Length: 348
Ligand code: TYM
Image (cartoon, rainbow, N blue to C red; front, top):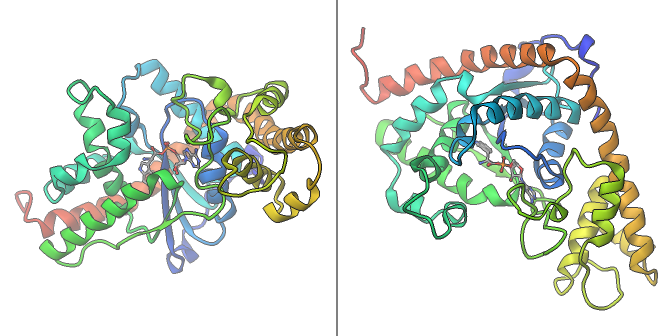
């Protein structure tokens, strides 16, 4: 979570990058960045930034799969870029860019459609969840969404994809599609591995520990948004549902406490077991109030840096423009290779 002040960020060096494993991950600019996004994904991106050759993408084309106005899209993209920078991603260590600035993503998606089966996409649980009872009325983009995600990843020959648990099935599909392409056209793509952490990969709703924390929830008390004030965070945690009994333990019969202990462990950087011992015999009141303070402590510095980035939108835009140029430098030659493998184009 150590963000460079904007004034000192400089273009990172391209050299020693190639020896490192490549990481690619993405996040949708659909508004309401929440604690689940942070703990399940972004925090890990930031922590692992030094180890890998990183590409982090604001996936605006994915966000088109549900209705969104142009104004909302524009402001969500800039806001999310500021959030990522405020969370500690830095252009010195990561290529940070917007998906639609690199046209090869959409282009590769179409090519991969030809090696993806209708049945594979119909089985995606996230598609089934989001489509609900309205399969006839949803956009074709929502259906094709996982193919675009596969394109994002394999366009960069990513080795590792750090995501939350909800993306696991999409990663499996990505591997299947890439493997099928390689079998049909010859070795072209690296087969990526998911990087899903044991703790925090599935942060649950505060009002219902059987549902994942989600920005699409109708109840704002179910999630902690990065934009929540300390008082709102305290209120939401105080109201979070608990399990029957009084013990503060992370056990399968205590899904609500398991979730709160998981959040506590990540925001305070302490082992769940240590927290269980500390709160042994203590009531929920003390536990929740300490958890709320630890969460505020983790979020506040990000909010402060966010305000700084928001005051300098042109600097953020410049970082995204440089990121897009760096991404294109990898994506363009890869697409040329893919098209040639598939016999596409005039050959001119
Ligand atoms: P998105 O925008 O829904 O979420 C961004 C990241 O946050 C994680 N996440 C969670 N982790 C833990 N607990 C939760 N409750 C929770 N909610 C969300 C997600 O798993 C994700 O890692 N399809 C992707 C975006 C995408 C992508 C990609 C990701 C597009 N192309 C290529 C990786 C690689 C999505 O909608 O994430």
